[in-house]
Structure formats: C-alpha cells, structure tokens
Image 1: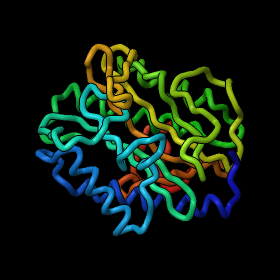
Image 2: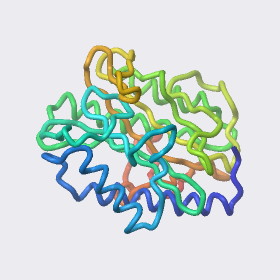
Image 3: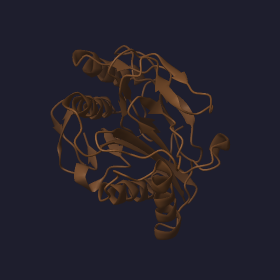
Image 4: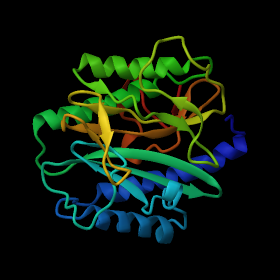
Length: 268
C-alpha cells in the first residue's frame, strides 16, 4: 500500500509515459475512427514508441489495451471495429501502462466535434469533480474527504455519482488497497499516509446513478441511457500534499478547482 521513494520514482516514470499517450491522442481527430482503430494506435504507441507494456491487455481476460466508453457507456467499453466515433459524441478513453514493473492508470473524456452544451457541461463538471477530490489528498486526511468533495460538487451541479465502481490503490498490481470511493463523509475512512499511491476516477451521470453490465460481460451503461463522463489520475501522497503522477503537460500550471489552488506536478 505504501510505496518507498524509489518505487514512487519508478511509478512517476510510468505516469509520465502514460501522460504522453494522452498527449498523442489529443492531437488526433477521433471523428470517423473506429474504437478498434484507436485501440490499435494506442497499443502501437505504448509498445513501440514508449517500449512499455499496456497493462490492461490480458488483465482479467480483457483482450484490449484500453476501454472506450461512448455517451451513455459509463466504463469498460470494449473496442470494436464496427463502433465508429462520430461528431457530437463524448468518449472516455481509459488506459493503463506498465514500465519497470509498476503500473499507472488514467482516463480522459474527449469531446468529439460539435458537442451539445449539456454534454459539454457534464464533461466539464466531471473533470472539476476529479480535481476537487485530488485537492483533498494530504497526509492525515481521510479517504472519506475525497469522496465527500467529489459528491458535493456533482450534486451541486445536478449530477449523480456512480457508486458501483471506485478508485483503487495501484503499484505492481493494477488493483491494490485501498478502495477510493467517490462519495462519502468528511473525516471518515482510512487516514492517508505519505507514500500511498492510488487512483481517483469519478464517473458522473446526467440522470440516475444506476448502471448495468451488458451481455459482453464488460460494457457498463446507464440504466436510463443518459450520458456519463469520467476522468482519472494516479496520485501519490507526499509529505505535505499530493503529486499527480499521470499529469499531462496541458494541465501543468493551470488553475484547478481544488480549493482555488494552483495545479502543478506537486502542490501543497
């Protein structure tokens, strides 16, 4: 659960490589591409350009390197050559990467072409909710502080938080302790300690938080077929705050919504 400084240094390398995968995707026009085409692009980039391993491939029997969740798909969308990304869609790409024995995990919801204002707002608030959760991370804080901040921001904006899936510890294994809920009460749950590494990955729905898994055994959808969005980062608890191991270059120095503090590679 708690990583040594040397282990965090290796995780930092994995995180930076994974951030570069998203930076590559940021430069692509996703419209008109199949989700399988995106999967194959990401696999080639991770294995060839970065000399790393796509950690999701083969995990729990999953055959692909990423999850691609479009519109009302909440998470775990399966790449498909027949699934074409179209203008107006929102799509979450959830990617993992292993380098030197340590795994990083991150996701981002992309706006494809001209997206309706209601969908654009959901994506914006979901990203903000993730930053709200990250802003609670420091030694001595509680896991419940993270969930409380995320849920409060979601509810204030009229959205529900999916409760069936959560963040998780990460390191040599994809899923380690602790579980990081995206709802909760302040001052409850495990106390955070320097060296802990875990993901924060809220999923917000336009309508009900209720979800179901489709017959493929992977794809999770909203029961009411309303839109869902997700963002995720892998973070480490530092001596005085948090370091975002999967931070992308476009996020460095930006003004977040984490109690009004500046977002950087590490902050108090």
